[in-house]
Image 1 (cartoon, helix red, strand yellow):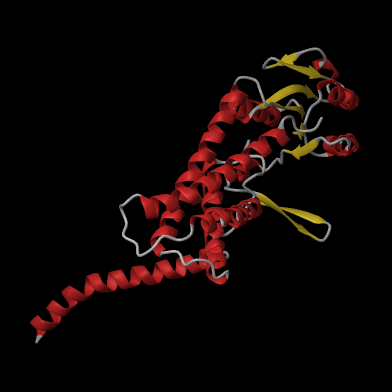
Image 2: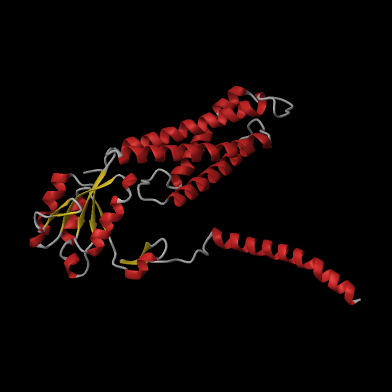
Length: 307
């Protein structure tokens, strides 16, 4: 019931990034000093540069792991993936520059370091995109699937099913729907088998080998299902809950926070946090200087005419 092929895909993604960073680090060296496009006063030791490949790769991979690059990306938006990629690359590059500076290794020109930055951005973003496209193609053909079940047959459950089915590249495949409605036993919804007794949940999960279960019912009915969910969780099944937020569901990037033993759902959070505050301050000051420069010319002309 564990996630199928996750370890293999995880290993391949890491291996691809390791090879990409290592190749780029050495390719930039040869491009900088042997292409003839750049002048130089001397060529750093090739062997020393080759040995530096190991710490450079380790630094980049640690930063990418810290940024969550190698987590499951089946349902993560593309823009958020790109943002995390760029953040991890810039962070890794910064630590590489610091490492080269404090390790007292052969001094590298700014040209080589700048070339390596652009090579990292282009190389890792390209390799990531190709890997994701390959996974999408594989999943759309029925491989590397993750199976799930839905508890509930109401409007929200059907909407969830249709949303997932519309994203075939995610590799999520519904195995069954189940609800406490005996009249639905033996029927199908959108080609998916429906079961009318929640007591069958444990046996169904074992028979179908699902990886995830989605709870799409609420209120007292949901409370009676929690013991079954707890049992599935202990067996390695991922449990997800579809909240009944109504219009709040349209708000951007909901999340959860814990205060003591209480869980709060955040429907929307102010973007002015952390680095965004600093960036906004820099942007405001920059735009103020630009506007001041644009308005200073006509003001000076008016002042001269007044005199």
